[in-house]
Image 1 (cartoon, rainbow, N blue to C red):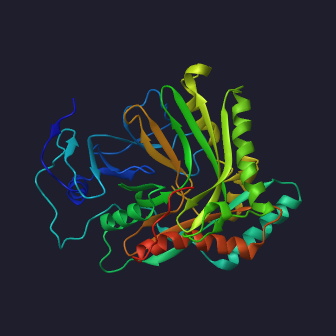
Image 2: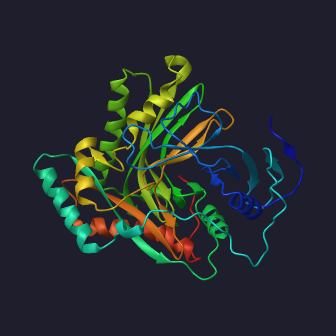
Image 3: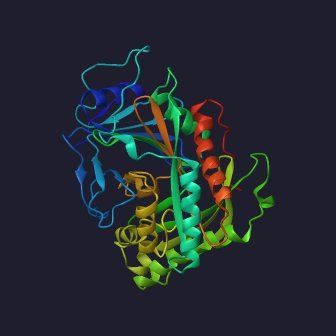
Length: 398
């Protein structure tokens, strides 16, 4: 049974206590919500395997990009669960040992975090390699190998001397109120932080929701979304993702769904095209739809390509990058009866002295290699702005 204590705490104290116990930790804030959630798994190692959303206990899941059978999904159970607000007030803590052993942080101490055990020799963000990969992708499309492929690259940013992992999360959370903002630190797997605009699935006992998000362009924060103009390449790229979702519905013979969009939505200083799909689970008598669609959708064509397996083969042969958790999925499961899993985009891995930022671009027949490189630079810049302390606030979606 949960233990509820009235003792006041703060996020840094919760985090440091969990690190002292070598725990796996997830901190997150859902889009347009004020509550910040803290979860710590204090077991010797996180559970790994295919998840069944309907049967999984309350917790947090993290999946890598390459996870074809679902067996690489990590599950963090809620040994400690706390809910606070973005004004720093944390008044409710649940779970045995939730308050730790009294080792509260000192103001002048750096906040610790887990490092990745994998040597980072595979990290590469060279422009020439990326341009060549895009060119090869266009050639493969012209030869009929696939219709679209998403190519990714990295960008290295040195950490400042006063870098603090919790301060960084707080800045990111305030800068992007319309994103799912997360910070995850797991022994052996490292520490990842991001602000993703893309929901993969949302599922409860009575409702299911997913979205298709694609197409990217820079857009001034003070400009109205009704003024957005999309070219044919961006419209078709987003339509491919939408068709992919509908094809998965057809695979399981689901016809009763509501489609809304596409419409322009903000993600910091960028905008995307978004279409939303909703299903009434009581009407279709399909309570396990969340799990079924999770297995069918990941990885979506927005982060992989179409057809999926042809695109995956190209990525494995040409990208020369271990994406790890980038473009995988993560999020809380069965929190108050709702599971929300997001595609892990606009993210970075925090190493000892630097952050590695990840970004990708959707390649189609109409792609221009130099513009695709510029798109990835724009996506990285949204995180760099916050890291450097001058990120602009997101406007709400219009």
